[in-house]
Structures are given as structure tokens and as C-alpha cells.
Length: 375
Image (cartoon, rainbow, N blue to C red; front, side, top):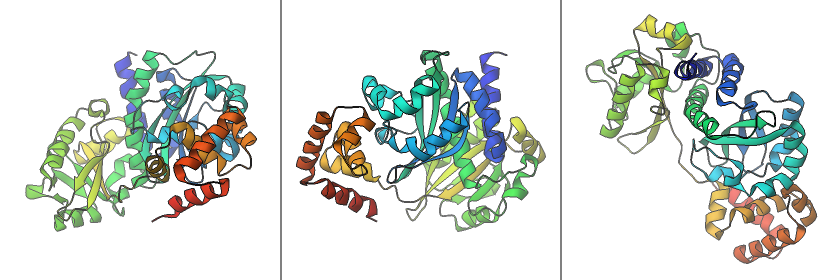
């Protein structure tokens, strides 16, 4: 099998998993093999509580993954810095903190190195003001460090995992039979449309019909799905056309198309091709090229770490110390967790007191709590 065939089949498996979560392990196993990594995980991170959640994984020791969720995830030194990077950007450890410093952290010493991992890549797939979803691959010593080819392949896979994650969120990750896609999704609160390569509406659920009837964000002149915003409309038409060529041809297009209603409300559309994988059954059944899921989005509010960092002009190192010191009792404990000497922690703490006009650790706790509780 050549690389083009391999990536095409992999993308198809990833999109099939958006309809049937039981297929994620198979998709991740193939992604792991394609990238050349040793383990793959899709996790969530709450920036306020620092708790981690697991969507799906492959290649990780279950016991170590459980320890990550219960204990080590909340001291992962790549956060909150990793949150500040753009969605889908490939990150490595030095993007977040010096590699030598990372290797001295409690997280690396007690969780990463005992598993034999020597390198990692990650990317944000979705962000909200208080959390993020992260796709991560790790490399065992026997596989060596991530090279340029691995980075290239990781970057190819990321947008497709993101699309599948977003569509899975829309349909609430219930198993959907591809051949019965329309019937299965008729009760969705989000608008759902099955369209041809020209945007002709073949099927719509009740929410979809309501959207085109109101004509605030979407219309259906002559039975073709269009957006009220001209730029978004052209983007959708281009996506519908390309979707007919299969999963790989779509690339990053249609992962999350922003839509603006006439009254200013914001929506987002996610496009799922129906011409490959198990979804081909639905495409053949309906003569369709793609399924489109449209939902209203909330306000794009910045996260507490971003607001605090910008308000007080904190460096990434100062931000790591701040979010560690508010949960730990002593400078020595923060130093051990972050892998730095106590004097360095005290230096960062002194700068935090100066920048935030506070004088005690308790004041810092109150300051962060105030930003996290703000509406």
C-alpha cells in the first residue's frame, strides 16, 4: 500500500469513528502506525481545575493512563502554555518549556520516563474559555525521536481527528448506522442536512428545516443549501464540490465553517464526506456527497489563564508557577513538581507579587478564583 492509499484509508476510518465511537481504537491504531509513534491519545484538559479526561487512546499502558487521569494530568507542565497556541498547530515540548526543565519535572520523572517515552507531539483540537481537547502522540525509545516525516504525517492527521471530534460532539457520540444516517439524526437539536456535490438538499432534519425557513443563517433557494453570508456561502459550495472526491481531498476545509446570521448570531458548520468508508453506504443510499451539521456557538470569551496572562503581562514560566502555587502548600513542592530549584520559584513568586500587586500566596489564590468565577 502506498502512502496516498494509507492516508486515505486512515482518514476514512477516522470519519467512520465520528458516527460509531467503538471504531476509534482501530482508527487510532492505524494513526499510530502511519505517524510512526508508539501511543496515541485524545484527552481533555480543564484549565481551572487542571483535571484531565480521556476520550480515546491506543498504545498506552492502562495503569499509567489511569494514573495520568487521577494524579499526573493535573501537573502536566505543558499546560497551561500549550493552550495558548492556535488550534491544529503541531507542538513539541520545547514550544512550551525548555526540554531540560521538562525532564526534571515530577511529571516526566514519575510518569513519562518510566514508560520509556522519549518524545511527544500534540495539538489543540478545540478550545473553550475553560477547557481544551488535545490530540497527543508519544514516541518510545525503541522508535526514536519524532523526525520531520513524523511531524508532517501528524499535521496531516490532526484536522481530520478534529472534524471527527466536533461531529461526534454534535451527535453526542451515539452509534449511528451510516446507511440510516438521516433517520438516525432527525431528532438532533443541531441542524443536519444531507446534500449533493452542488449543495442540493437531499434530506434535512426538523432543526435544519427550521433554519432554512427562518433564513437567518441558511437559505434554500431552488432547493440548494446556501448561507446568508456571501463568503460563507462560497466556502460551503467549494466544500460540497470537493467532498465528492472523498475524505482526503477535503483536507482542512469544512472542519468548522463560521456562519453569521442576519442578526449577528454566530453559528458553525461541520462537513462530513459521505463518499468513503462505511459512510459510502449513506452516500449511495441518498445520492449524496456530504452531511452538514450546523449549530449555534457561544460567545468567544477568553480563558482565565489568557486573561490573567494578558492583564498582568505574565511570562509562561510565571504562569506555570502561579497555577501551581495556588494548589500547593509550599515553594519546595512547586519546585519538585516543575523541576526547578526553590530559588527560581521564589524569584517567579516575587515577580508575581509585584505584577499583581499582591503580597501573599492567599492573595494569589483569591485573584485567580475571582477571574475563574467571573461571568
